[in-house]
Amino acid sequence: MIEKYYEALQKRENLRENLVGLRAQIKDEAAKEQFVSMIGDGGLLLELLEEEDPKVRKNVAMILGELEWMGAADALVTAYEREQTLFVKSTYLKALAYLDITAYQERFKTRMEELLSYTPAAEEKKHIDEEVRALSRLLEKAEESTDHTFTGFKNPHEMLLLTGHARTDVTLKEIGVLPADIRRKTAKHPLGVAVYTKDVRAMANLRTYRELLFPIRLKQEAEQAEVLADEVWQSGIGDFLKECHKQGTPFRFRVEIRADMENDKRASFAKKFALQLERVSARWLINSTGDYETEIRLIKKKDGSFAPFLKLYTIPMRRFSYRKNVVAASIHPSLAAMLVSLAKPYLKENAQILDPFCGVGTMLIERDIAQPAREKYGIDIFGLAIEGARENASLAGEKINFIHRDYFDFKHDYLFDEIITNMPVRGKQSRSEMDALYASFFEKSKEILAPGGVMIFYSNEEGMVKKQLRLHTEYRLIQEFVISEKRHFSLYIVGIKG
Image 1 (tube, helix red, strand yellow):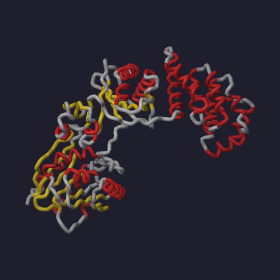
Image 2 (image 1 turned 180 degrees about the horizontal axis):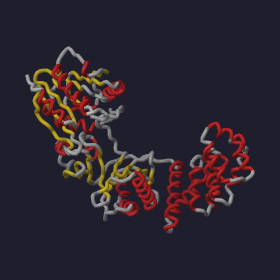
Image 3 (image 1 turned 30 degrees about the vertical axis):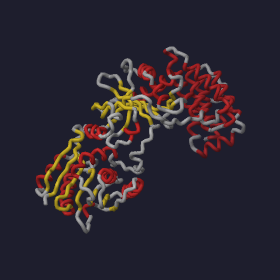
Image 4 (image 1 turned 180 degrees about the vertical axis):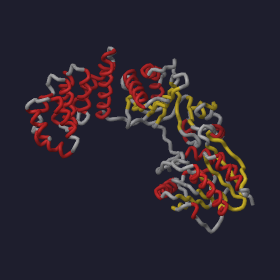
């Protein structure tokens, strides 16, 4: 097959169709090597860069790139610079991404400056934008990126401690123990807790929130991607980043959109926003989907406009550094810490505690950080989770006994003061299967709980919990904390009589 395409190219027969077919064939490594062995110095392909048909030029450029033909770089750059057909220009850049372009870097920077200062006509915009995106990716790959060192703030700023649940009171209480000069202003926010402070490090050590974000205040609200990007840049985001970092060099960012949008529309919006932000900042902000230091999060509001936030990955966050291993069912450590904080009045010092569905150990670790226990046991039927839990506990400096076993087969020489767990969610299990699991959980737990012991568990099966409490009169519901009304999750504190 490769021979057929090679001969067709030599004879200039059906070039467009044969180049498309050849591109598909050389995806196979053996076919690729065979073709490389046939084309010698590559002159045949290089000549095709001058063909009249733009789609021929486009396909041959991509073939040269995908072959990683080092001798093609100069020809591809020359072809790119002379190309007049707009939809082809970005293809040369995509092809050059496979090659070393160090020698051409300054030429590409000059071209980028031209494009960023140019206002394209409506019919040109799509292709010019694509060229800018391809050129940006090429320069990002070639340029030596500078990591930025977070140095803190000279002046107070508004921060949002994102919780993701209704119990913002727990985080407010956690902030409340900090000195007044650190927590200058605090208030509940629809997404968590708003704090006005300059002491980021104090906030970074708190455990009951999920993420630390900085609101980006706009002069006017915007719904369109390009307008929104202009507003974000004009908000002073550049000065903000310079204030809290040692280096004043360009920053790499990614875009995250939280909105009820179809995937293709979300992707298109993100591309337009990122491209315009690069353009208006003269690439002081560089879009990077992999090696990024900041995230611009756009949360869509009810009126259709967006609330933008900035997340800094440059801020050292070590509060959950132990969490090296996770599984699909793992609870987020900030949620575990919040649940433990709610349950703290019921935690016994130097208790013997057990997590019957421990996963990677997060609930046990956070529980012991909040109130040290004497003996800690974690059980799970998933072996990989137990292995991960052992490593996580070691990294946290916690001594916990993890056992790969089914809780309902577990036996122990002494009784436990406390059971603390994140209950399994239904997933693919039927309602009757979950009902049976809760029945078994209540039955088994009364065998291993000491008189006066407590069960502390997080669940979204209120009906099943209340049913088992009715059927098992040896238990009493001490307290129920609603965590998420929308998702029906609550924290239950259940005591055993005795």
